[in-house]
Amino acid sequence: MAALAGVGIKTVSRVINNEANVSAPMRERVQHAVVALNFQPNQGAGALRRSDQRTRTLGLLLDAVDNPFSASVNRAVEGAASGRGTAVFAASFHDDPAVERSIIDAFTRRRVDGLILTTISADHRYLQVELEQGTPVVFIDRPPVGLAADAVLTDNYEAAAAAARHLLLYGHRRIAHLADELVISTSRERRRAFADEMAAAGQAPTHVDDLSSEAIAEAAVRELMTLADPPTAIFASQNLITVGALRALHSLGLQHSVALVGFDDLLLADLVDPAVTVVAQDPTRMGTVAAERVFARLEGDTSPAATVVVPSQLVVRGSGEIPPPPD
Image (tube, rainbow, N blue to C red):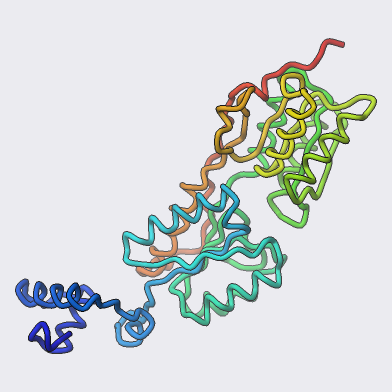
């Protein structure tokens, strides 16, 4: 490439790495050579020569990249990173702590510049060495345990409490809470908030826990509806659980009789009948803020670890406003 451009190797390196002290004509000649040769720089090798030792990559760990919430986080992180010439390696661990560790090890072996992590393990002190070596670590959606690190979260307790209060406000007393697996910290927080709001209203909470898929959630709702006193309302505290609950209510013809509030928004939630009321997190904002925290750390921010809480919103659409049947 240097021969084609008629410049020295150091000049080529300066242009490719967007360094200063290269004249406009020389920069243009190198750029023409890059296009002519379809050159793709080796970021790993380049990091060994660059003064900042960066690989221009981030590691992003998500529960499941096909989950709509995770997909939105992924897109937001990629959007923030691409503007800084950084690629994102994204991987799913499906709430398996062994897979979590394996993927993070793979990221660090590839010398990613920073880590953005959703995790399931109960102790994150194994990441202390990465922090000490200068790798920014930002937790997203779920907080770190045993480690002082940046985090970007929703106030899951308050969001779930708002959902419970909403159903109570509309007169419901037999409300079923459908929970994700309780090994997940956010699931436990949402469950605790629901129980507290029900207790404050003098009602006994109904919990169906550890619903790990749409199909299991659908079966759980079908079973609930066979009870002598079935619930008149449902709080589905995870998006795929909401989908399972929707399938059950529609197949039973109860979608206009049983109120439903979901946690996390759904694609086409406003187009079903009735449209689905949800407590919506803002995964796009969460992903953007997490990426910004990583880049701030890379650029020299040494302030103490901080937690950013991104607000949620109760989106009223109809399903959560169905009143209970008259006594």
